[in-house]
Image (cartoon, rainbow, N blue to C red; front, side, top):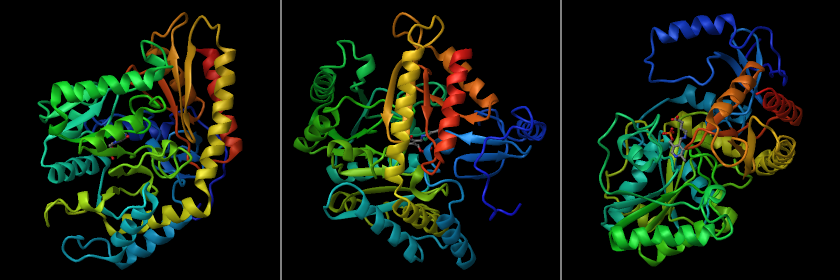
Length: 451
Ligand SMILES: Cc1ncc(COP(=O)(O)O)c(CNCCCC(=O)O)c1O
């Protein structure tokens, strides 16, 4: 079948998962790729689109992962393919720092318009999320002439040396790869489910603790930037208690600290809004984006207040491939799709369906003597369940892994997350048909029952 043939939106298992051809390819991978490049599910994909991934053995799997929150518009979305194909045939690379091209400027204009705040903005494009975060730090330091960077418990920001230092969880991201950059400081985050005095005062108490660390241990006048995910992704889809983000943003503003929202996982309609900061009306000084930006092509960005972005001297920002023309064309196609298909509305609907079913499952398994759903949380199509052992809040990473494995065997691609490895996260493409969403949740419920 040609790539243009639409994929049947169905779960179809014709072999065990993974099938024989995938197993052959996995054997080749082990002989060609280092073990450090892990694999969640060694199923080798041949085609993908809508809410499914087709593998080399002819199986069709339901996708609750979107390649880790990337294919929001669906794999090979029509507008992405059309624009990227046209660009591929025109030119593939000139280096925007050498001889520029309109696509980069057009993407920057879109991001300046779409991101929160109606102030004058500028956008610089890069290739990966970590690269965007690295550059947000450079820009904040250039603007403030300060060096300290504040990040939060459970935060994740990348795998480069600086972003490993910004990331909280040691394994698998940091172990053995130090030393890490200096001038990085970690403070508490308002994690309602695990806040020791309960969720009610979590936001105020966590903000007070974070601000005390900044003022008493670092010196607010020494801090260039605070960097926070509006919903912490790899840390376990932690929604900071309402009020926490505005309190941190307000403190930053009052102390000349650049407030950086890392929306690499939450951005581009994933949470039912263009950007998750909108939920509490927070307007960041800088925002980092990637993942959903270009329908799967590698592109990342720092967008922010013009006076801050312009603090970096001419030639201080860049890189060979930053804002590659094909990736920019794909991004324009992705953003066009987000608008034309109302993907914010679709994400909100996915959230309604998933939260309803998962809360019913939480009730159904409330008395299980094997595993329980400690919390159902998230917004839009960024939903998760935190799994705990019966009788309390002790994380249950083993049950989490077992349930994910059972889902994989039944042709449902799900991902885990969390500092304690006890979070099942759900990131379906925003274009997933509702019947596949329902079927995926049925598979999940069966996996819970059988753990
Ligand atoms: C908030 C947030 N900031 C930064 C990043 C980093 O983005 P890159 O494009 O992976 O560099 C992420 C990437 N998250 C998925 C990492 C997967 C893995 O490497 O195991 C993120 O979620």
